[in-house]
Length: 441
View 1 (tube, rainbow, N blue to C red):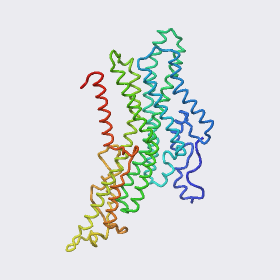
View 2: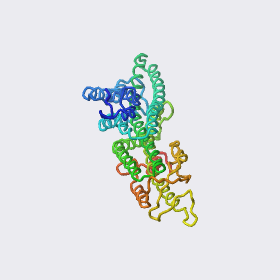
View 3: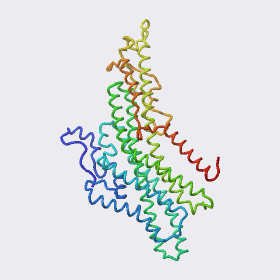
View 4: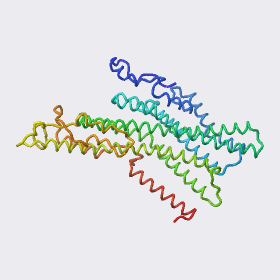
């Protein structure tokens, strides 16, 4: 049973409890789709580990290992050319995802804490609403990946078992049962792998929402202490995410790369028969594994890019505040600007006008639009409540330049440069392998 205890400790004031009532865990909250999916996958995340863990492991061994092995040993269908490679790749991917998912749930203390819902109460209402919408949308993303694969696999297996019933003379009900077992095993293994990838995507999206709010702090508050507090909190969250998912990302990268190189070797060997009937299952397996890996890498690189872009946002804010602080000429003062009080300690800092902030909260899927778009229009108004000196702003920019946060994998930052290097390594290996097999030079 999922944890139904409220995240807020007892004794809080009624106003605070009502404000964060949406964070209390219940059977009908934002996680009901994820809980249903985990229950369908028989992944133990309850508070009674003994019996549930035994049942979870039993279902995993039955569907991921025993079912495909039994179908091969019984010989109920004609041998498929690339079936062994497909089954090994899917079983290894499902094993990796199952072990990582159980470890993540156990280490984080449940699904809510794995998705950082316990710390969501400190975020703004916009972040909470956006994250709740993303939770509901992410389950649809999972279904969009799994259902087409399941339908294609069911059609492919139905074709082969129909041929088996005609060639081997086996009863139709026996072929139908074996086909259903294979399809169930396929869907279970693919859904396990995609489940971990979707969870990682959701967690990264929360950090992106926080970065959008963090970018607005420069214009709304212009408070160095608040900015530092938010940045350190985000850095700590990204450090936890990196530590939890680094093994899964590295193992997935090695596994998917090895499976694709093995598929390339198998399809380019002499006298290999490659068509839709023989290699369709291999192509479907490759597409599924590569899609899951790309989902993780894209999410990690996106949050790293958004986080590192805060340095340019802070530098632009610092430059605009410094320049506009001295635009007021002492001989011909502008009544709309406050008087200056020296180079190192301007009397007033500035904030972005409230109507000029809409650019920072746009669609995050377009990489060409960063959070610094809210600072492109330099319309500043005096902000008398906070007197930020030049040294404080310079210290903030220096801190952000030397403390760039992001998703890391054993010290390597997963950004665009890392992805470009990875692509070149993979491309070089593919070209070398093609040169050894089909003679491409």
